[in-house]
Length: 353
Image (cartoon, rainbow, N blue to C red):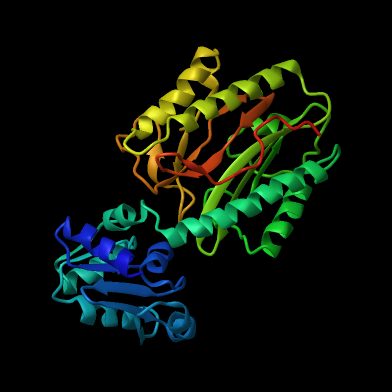
């Protein structure tokens, strides 16, 4: 935790600040070890949590080396914050326009910036990596469960229920990602042509390709992996597309190394798919960073200017999506090293059930 705080302060100094205020739970957790309703204040030598009384017990027991101040929700909470930061040069992740306006009246040198948080969080420490490894192992077990439980006539929603039951038993939970109504992506047949398909009551049928995207949170951290399964008599076209995506991902993984550009990883995947005449059907970026959020820095995209560094954690997930027919996506999370560490060991060969 000391190293994280040191990195946060170092990143804040680069933008002219000496104090960091965290409102967002991911940043509060990174700074303090506590995930809840509170405000975190980090200044040289001291970390403080300002929390309503209903959260104080957890804040004291779950945080690391933090002073905890109790204040009622609303203005009382802000008043306590102002006392701590009034004469400081402050950066904050507060996204509430009205609250920022109120704070600026009392703290003229406060500014909105998420840069210090993301700059610090982009490199994972050994504790974070250990958590991601454990979570990824459980996700591999869930893919193995798919091979035993997927069957004709089963609804997407039924498979999701089976998988989430297993996940919860092993302390993996929904990420709370705002852009979906479901914890997982389970997409059979034509639904698989939608990269962010919502889970439906459609029944799996003979010949389906079934995209299973498992993105779950363990001890605060998100791991993310996708496999595509076949059911029954899979068409030669579907098998061919699957092998193209598999080879594309293999090339993308090979391109991952410290010092390489994120764009070069995207290029490795995308150029192969283009050369196989499916370029227009690869309709998203090749990957993204993972950590306390589902999508965080760095972006593995055609427009990225970021270079990979040791202990970044990213996904590589090329896909081909043929409208109204099927989709194929193969995704792994990995740790950037001289020899990248794949977090997921489950096979990428096409399993036909």
